[in-house]
Length: 66
Image 1 (cartoon, rainbow, N blue to C red):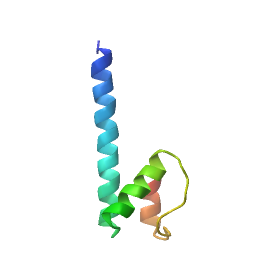
Image 2 (image 1 turned 120 degrees about the horizontal axis):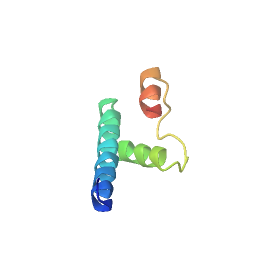
Image 3 (image 1 turned 45 degrees about the vertical axis):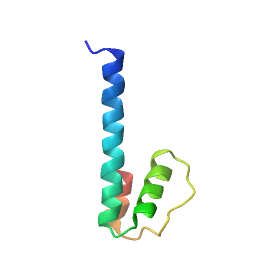
Image 4 (image 1 turned 180 degrees about the horizontal axis):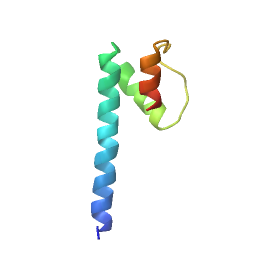
């Protein structure tokens, strides 16, 4: 059985990997570093300020959903 500390580490690693993949995905879509990080933060934390840029591409919309 995993200890509480191991579970915290695993959860933190998965969360960090999610952030990294999301930022890289937006960068590959042509967004700047700051736009990418901002979009990821407002999407993951559900702040809902709105998109940095309009997301018209269906593939990028799907990426944002995932």
